[in-house]
Image 1 (tube, rainbow, N blue to C red):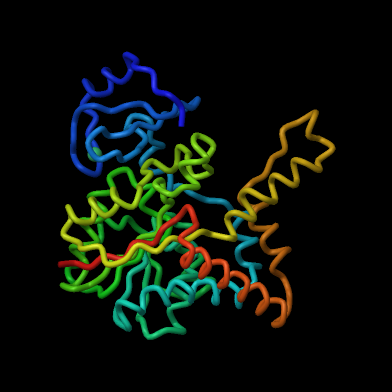
Image 2: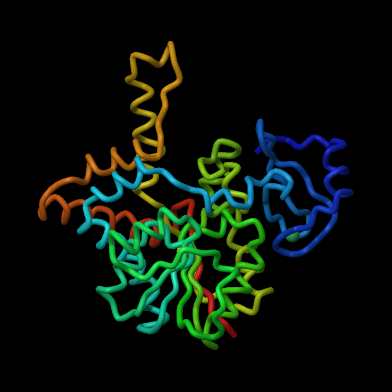
Length: 322
Ligand SMILES: [Zn+2]
């Protein structure tokens, strides 16, 4: 971790009314890292790390998300494998709720909602990107509504609310969790997966941790996420340590290999888009039933090992509405 120099910007941010999105503390923020387009600050009271609101991406950033090249690649993905990978997530949930109505917030392309058909849950989703929601409803034929979760007019109707890789992107995480509380029945559970800033991997990686980006405006640790949930009326039941083998492969290992073996590396910056990442994943995972089963089992083993050894830089927090 870098030493922190006291500087005038710290005072300026406090004066400008910076408020901790987790504990509402309004004074004493230190700058942890500075990058060219944003910085990461830490609350002195609860140690939560976040990007100041003035440096957030535009509010309609996700609503405007559209990438036809990625959509084409996602449509070609190995569906059997997607199914098995998503069913792993239902195993975590079913230890706390065995059935009921489930809402997936930030449903993306809709694969998790789709996998719900093979479970005892009745699943639906809400997704801010029109392109993603359309893909889910037209291509997968699942109920994923295009819209903002905060505009959803529902009260005490769901047994489970899930947010996979969502809360780190949300400008006001407390309002999101409050909305989850509102739409859940009494005793219902919320399942939140986010990068874990309190993990040894995150701490050792320092400023080069792959989860630090301008898109990830909230970097929760185990304590800060539990605190936020508690403030919104939830009791944390379990924190599962995990990692995402797919992301490590397509966003870290493959781009690194491509750069290392690229003849262009001295003359030009290697470009690697989200479509390239999905293309790489498709190429690796393409195959018949046998290959799919081998990959699915390897994926499941890595997830189980990560949970058992508590090694991973992501976490799944399961909390109950009290
Ligand atoms: Zn705080």
